[in-house]
Length: 445
Image (cartoon, rainbow, N blue to C red):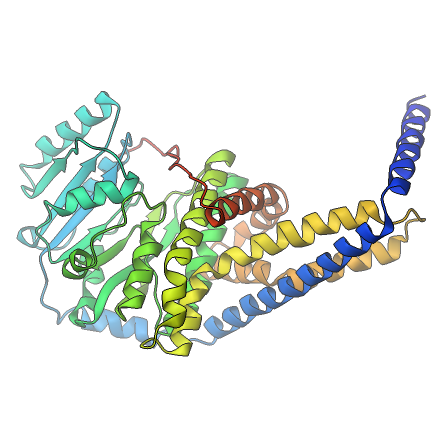
């Protein structure tokens, strides 16, 4: 009985499908089929680039990492300001506690918590925390700005007014640096041409669910493949947290861009234009959280896509037409937006055009052998990112996460690419986007 009902429904569907299909002009199929294969070719090129970067990183020796550790003992320790911008996030107190316990002379650094909270109980807890720990570490204070516009960059610029350090170290509220973090991140600043230093991220909740599996895999791939590859080309980027910048250069360049959704990339491009160095420290790692709820991940990736594309819209032309930046440096600087080519190609090109081509194709019996061949071929041609991701997880000692990461890529990953494309389109057409606050842990121990 059930089989007969299902069979009847199937025949009814096919009858309507054939009727609608016959109404669609055949050239529509050919147009989208051509667009699909163009997208597939672009996807294959991007895939090869990821494979090339992965292979390049595999053969890289860690001599430079070891050298950075040796220099550490000889450097004169600068005075540092640690900035922790936060808004309604109790977890910022865990970050502050980690900073108080740095193995760095107490008289050589200060901590500023930039409290943008709109919840009075959160601000009370932050002030209570500061008063309690002032007995142990007197150089800690809270700044509360009357005008809370400009999102995180606005908060950072306000804290900058009260920062005494020659080096500024920034942490988002959910970051948990190790005791030797501060002593190690200031090492590259012995080179006067270095304006920024970025540490490597790792995630303390990667195994929680498929959302954190996908979010952490994206992060690990960026750090273990993209940034590691660019380091070999002497090109670096700031990531927004677990980073350090030279205050003098930041002030000279006008501070952080007010209202930017990715102030890190925007400032990185300004530094590249001025031929300033950003140094990546793959040997210095810092734990943080990746979003654990689907819509938090979607909004995070959408915001990042919007901010990165907006930054390249503003600075890309100046970089490409610069007479003082070499062709090689231009190429690798522009690679900072490289990761957003793949979602556009995969979603708008391969997935969307492929789906339209499939449903507008003249009705004919399904050739299952050919169908499986085409699916296998398409995955093989565009699988470079998955291979790079698997390599990154192995390097990050998260091998057991690979099955969950792959499953999440073909499920919520498809939804994520939709939101990434939404962010890109909004940026290209100058549509506004707000900063979404993500839910973070409230454990401060």
